Amino acid sequence: MGYTIGMPSLKLSNIEGKGGKHCGNFHKVAAEALKERKGLDMDINPELAEHNIYEGFATAAELINYSDKHIDELNEWRAEHGERACDRRKLKKDTVVMCATVIKPPAEMMSELSDEQQQKFLADSLEIFKNFVGSSNVKSAAFHYDERVPHLHILWEPMADEHRICAKDMHNIKFFGKLNREMPKQLRAKGWSMVDDCRAYDKAEEEQKRLEMGEKQYREYRKALKADRGRDSRAYKHDVEQQIAQEQQELEQLRVLREQEEQAAGMAKIRREANENAAKIAEDKKNQAETELAALSQALENKTKELADVDITIVKRLDIPPRPSKPKRPDKPLTPPASCDRARQKEYDRAMKEYSKAFAEYEKKALPKWEEECCKWDSTYQLAAVVQNADKRQKVLLTEIDSKQTQIDKRLREIKERAEVINQRAEDVYKKEREVYYAVRAIVKAQNGKFKTIFETLCDSLRKGDEYENRYIGHQCYDEQDKANGKQYAQRIEARD
Image (cartoon, rainbow, N blue to C red; front, side, top):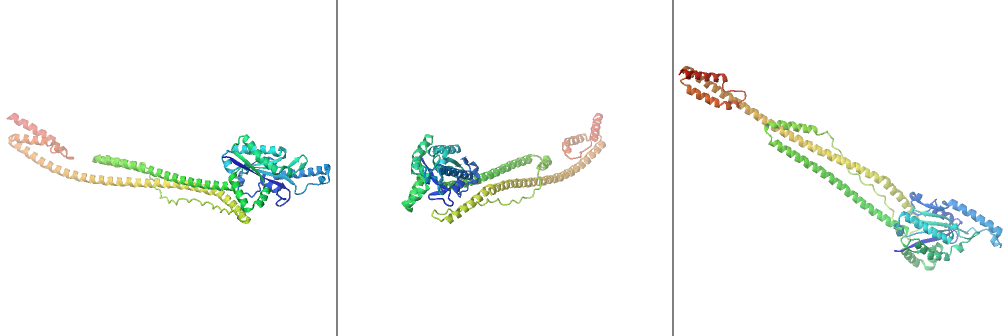
């Protein structure tokens, strides 16, 4: 796709106000194009003014001072060397002392080029333009990068020869036709193949064309010309702002999705830890259920030690405020219609300046502060979740310890009661066996071994009952010494018989 380069041109004079006939005011145009940047264009961004590049005179004051001195020198030369009386007069006040030409590439074309390519294109355009008007006549060139679309302002002096300044010979239809024919060819020769055409025109001629064509037909002509040349800076600015708003909306959606993913990841981690803790507690319960009564006390000590190792501090429940709300973006003023009056357009320009300042303040301060508060809120929320999880785990452990302690106390009571019953029974059995034993021994002594068989049977039964006797705590069924005496006595009886 080829592009058409716009090159509006204007003659400039020193007359105060709007300038002379078909002329602009030299002082105002120079102050707008050079370092002073006193223009009213809303596209100008003062923060990017330091990136502008100037060749020749960089300020309007320097260029105006040079022009005034040069006009005085020309007047002196005319007074001294003029052949006719009219040639010896001073130049008129409305004399065209300077011409201003702007090289305006389309916004689409410049958006396709890198910063280095943009600067090279404008530099090549300046070099080619100098061939048409003369390098010595170009007094100042300003490369503007502080607006939406980079472009080039050229301020040149219409010197027909060394001592004659004449805009009619230098700034005319023939000059524009030559620019329109030769400029695209030479740009393509330097490698800028996307340039199809260059459109050089004078604003005075545009006004004349408006009168000749009529308002309606002229508007259709300008509309077709704009479509052929490409979008202007305002249309491009509107499209870029819409694109930025859409990208910001997408970034906001991505930020919300990222926060949701982080929250989901945090909940998954907490759920995984809870499952691990639940599995561990279940395993501990299983192991404790399989242990015997004697291991219950050890399990209680282990649980107590585990509880002591866990750092459960008394943490007050955190009162978490609601998530900080995003600050409201400044409202952009409505664009007035193209047919609005000048007062309304000035009001819109003033509102756009205020909107630019408010939007810059919003991006530099309000938005970063809100993001910082959101980060702090997320950290507080995660801390509260960890504290709440620790409280729940502490309650579960305390409940388990109370339950195990209750079971141990119950079993100890049962053991104690059973031991008392067994001891009582063992004591009763022991008394009865002692009574039987001493009764039998007395009978054996009295009958001199007559009841030997009965005695031995009784001893055997008592011997078999040793295992039963040893199960009772702290008791014996009979004395070992008595048993030994009984056996010796039985042996003596056998020897005598």
